Image 1: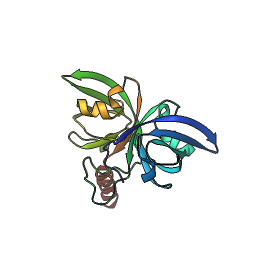
Image 2: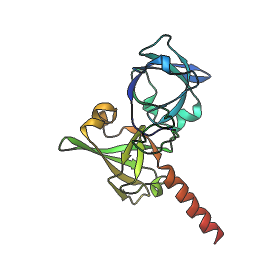
Image 3: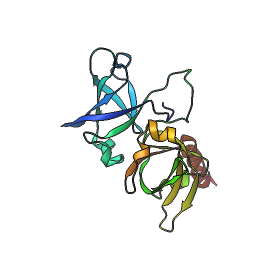
Length: 208
């Protein structure tokens, strides 16, 4: 379980094909406090630490990614040199500063607009029709692991949906989102509450 509040920006050091895909990520985390088997959200994808550097202080950790995970997430994310938003799993008693995030990517969005609004940036994102019912103005959404508020929503004639988010300077500085460009793919996780409400409505319609 995560909150969508990013605590480090990691960099992919290497990618190796070995059945599954082994990805080694450089981080500022104190690796002495990260156990093998721990969960770390990497740009919104919950992954398991399978190896790590020794000693304390900054270093690297490794994760294994299945073909299913690679197919369902933004393809440009998993290459050497790419920067990732990192968040360690929350502990009981931690402050819930964002919203409840599972680390299970629901789909991939595409950046369709970037413009400055004062010191902030307004980002427009296109979603496939399968995710359109789950997005509402002033609701929560996770973009590349970052908990954000939806500013507004515009449904398109082709069934897709465009929504806009606002990035304040702090968010731009402590996440990778400040460098987003038009055409870039991003990992999207919808609000878990929206997922259950939609399922309840589906079931209610079937049982009427």
